[in-house]
Length: 116
Image (cartoon, rainbow, N blue to C red; front, top):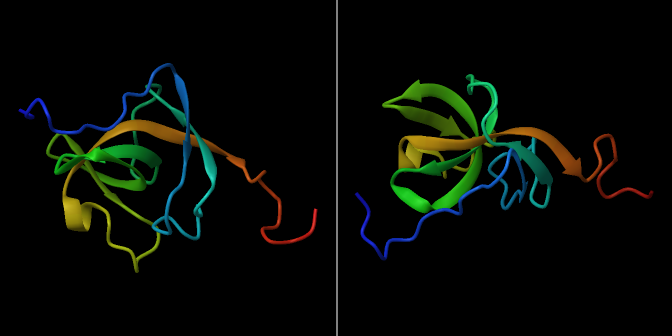
């Protein structure tokens, strides 16, 4: 049980939510500044899905990671960048809040840092 003054991650409302990637932990799949569309509910999470999650040990931290395996009623999640360890290796099991269904910015297929 959490204390009344303990911070918690924001509650997602509706079937879809927009989130921004902050940091390099999901590179090269996702990069800092990418805008994502997250589906709340829908089909169950499967290993390999990119998800929006909250670590039980860090309830104020909302993260985008890859679901690896179901564990202890939650999920073991990891970033795609093995050099960054701000995932279940550091914080343990996470509870999934939604599943990433699309990156909408920058537009898919656009070359980063290029013209046009």
